Image (cartoon, rainbow, N blue to C red; front, side, top):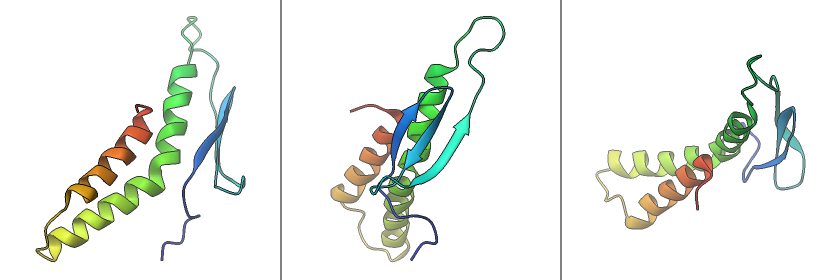
Length: 96
């Protein structure tokens, strides 16, 4: 059993920073970032990507643990295992 808050986690808001909440709406992470780099370049897309990556952390961890456990046990890594990992990566990247 992991010591972290169980997933799934979701990005609950993105503004000056972002918040990541668990399934019950409890905050598990928050971050603040500058609005721009001083040259007018917005950090909004970066904030969104950071929030997605943090929200995907429990999914990524679980998928990788499964793959490593099966690989070490000389068991086959199934297409379901790989699909779960691919889904976690897509969640982190914000792609369908």
